[in-house]
Amino acid sequence: MRVIHLFVSADEREQVSETLSELDVDYAVTSDGGADSHAMYQFPIPADGVRDILARLHDSGVHEENYTVISDAEAALTPNVDKLQERYAQDFTPLSSFSLRAKARSLSRDTYSFVWMIFLSAVIATAGLLIDSPAVVVGAMVIAPFVGPILTTGVGATTEDWRMAIDGLWLQVLGIVVSVVGSAVTAYTFKSLALVPATLAPASIELITLRLAPSAVAVVVGLAAGAAATFGITTEGPLSLIGVMIAAALIPAAGVVGIGIAWATPVIAVGTLLLLAVTVLAINVAMFVTLWVMDYRPTRSGLADYVSGDRMNTLVVTVAAIALVVSVGVVTAATAQQVGYQRTVNEQVQEVLGQDRYSDLQATSVTVQYAYPVGFTDRETVTVTVSRTADRSYPSLPSDLQQQIRAATDQNPVVRVRFVDYAQTNYSSSTSPANSSATASTSSPTLVAGITSTAAT
Image 1 (spheres, rainbow, N blue to C red):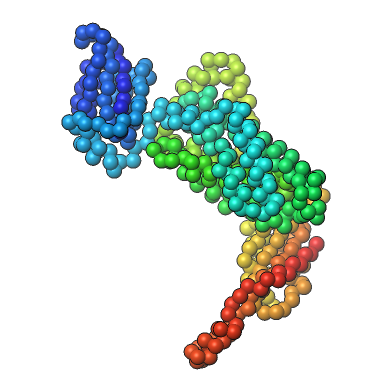
Image 2: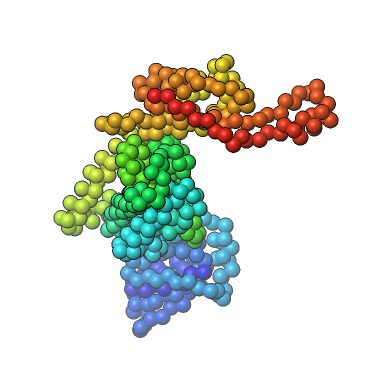
């Protein structure tokens, strides 16, 4: 339950009383004089009914922006409270605009604590990536406060609080920079002090290979995370787990960027930085669109009033708009190019493995590094993991894959093939149950520990 305290002028008292009576809302009035004086209305309503009732009051001519306070209530004993609860029990009613802004502001941190929390989470994530520990990486996600500025940016833009939107956007940029710098410093320290093997190849770590370049999956994850965050903040749902989801999409990627910088591997650094950028973009786009669909829509006059009110505001908005358009264009084009390349690689891998001589091989995963490192001397690496059930070698498979990919894409990647060997039972319908049982007991499917890797240039 919520209790609304609404201070209205003498001219609005009649409209408020009539509207609340029509909605079966029980209210109390406190005034400082007679019927022509200002009054304070107090009335309890279900949490899901706040936006609807305030909208009805606004439509009747009441300006709730003058003085409106919403507080929690343990319970309410009024004649119509049960009727109101039944009315709004099954309805999905998001928060009102100013309630949404208040909730978003409550997630904001001061810049000092935000920077330190982001830095520390980047340190933890980088350490977890270098030792290939998912548990440590998850711990870094829990403490990363990325959800605050992302939510304040979307809420500010859709509720016409442009100062909050710009502050949130600035904190997002600052958080990404701090996380990348923190990861690079941590990774370089680990490398310099020999806290990790000197021969460590970052691209060989599984948690890193998952984040080497943008992909369609990353876009989908970002869109889903942004939409989930929107539903969380516009309702009474919890935001803690949603914050972990958003951090999961950002903090490990920032850690990989830092590792790529520390190991002087531009292909890893640039590819993962692009992944990080497209994920942030997808989260923000999903949140803005979801808020728009939920009828939190800014008016052009709101932005125009903000810009025209101060020359500095005009400059800030103009610069931010130009930077945003350029960034979105570059990230979108590069991501589309990379996604197309990955799709072509997958198709070519499938075509090669479809040949008769590779009939007993099956691709289990294909990992593609960023494929367009302009000005870099390093070539991207395509790692193909295949399973086999026969003890046979395929020395020509890497070169066959490389030639097929080169012919289809004009790229000349380094192709690595990793074989995962399985032992398989020989079972047919003619085998007796007893024999098949005996066969299974001596030749059950098991994963062979040995993994063979082959590379071709």
